Image 1 (spheres, helix red, strand yellow):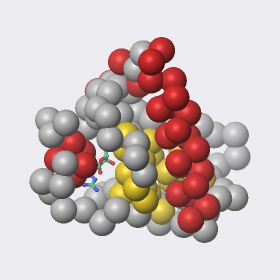
Image 2: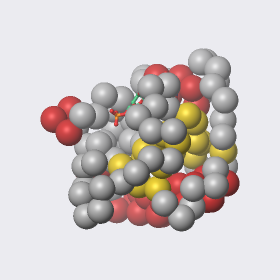
Image 3: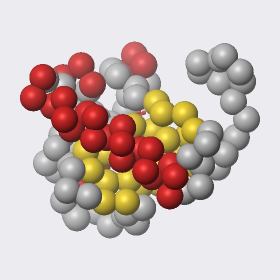
Length: 115
Ligand code: 5GP
């Protein structure tokens, strides 16, 4: 559980302000925000990358999406946010413990995936 920085936060070895917690995941502010709202939703179970998830993880993956929606609503950005999962170093993943980025509070270029 404590092999990545997120594992250490979940294990309580590194203090972090939890914006949300339930039995299966937590949400914390990103340490280097790319937007006014930049929150990470992190499962307590460590799946290194999305492609490492198995059929058994289906319920957890759905749970993470529902939790992300709840957290976005809680933060007042339920009407306009973007969810991002970086899978693999080539896509910019730096912490190998699956997480969803909730990005909000800035303009998003219409129809532009990366902006
Ligand atoms: P990735 O690039 O793997 O998709 O996202 C990892 C994210 O974790 C980055 O946006 C980075 O700023 C954030 N991050 C890295 N270390 C820490 C930390 O110790 N605390 C918090 N809150 N965020 C972190």
